[in-house]
Image (tube, rainbow, N blue to C red; front, side, top):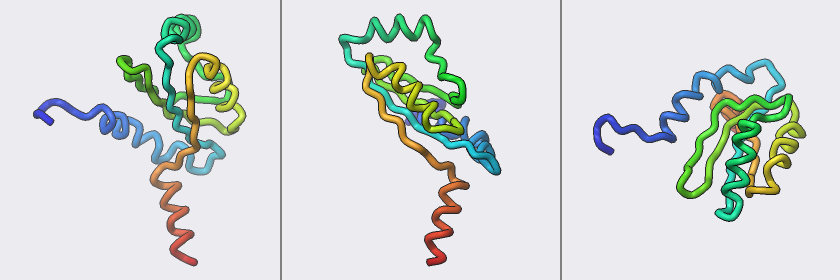
Length: 121
């Protein structure tokens, strides 16, 4: 990489790291990573819906960040919710137009606790 050019994935990870580090400590909040792909034939319909809604999540979901790769119609978001059904509701609002995968995620602190538990066995 040339000097002055930074990897978007690294910037995204760095910009959210401070939020992830303590966001869920002591709270019943789950993190989710969503990936989507817009088929070329649905591009205009997705643009229209996004323009109307801003892609805002339903109540109970907070979007921490969203990134788009415009040329190939893909992207990902990191969100938090206290109820997985809220994430399912959000996905169902879009899966008529795009393919979407939603996965639970752990931050370093949460994964560290899981790994520490495995080491004790």
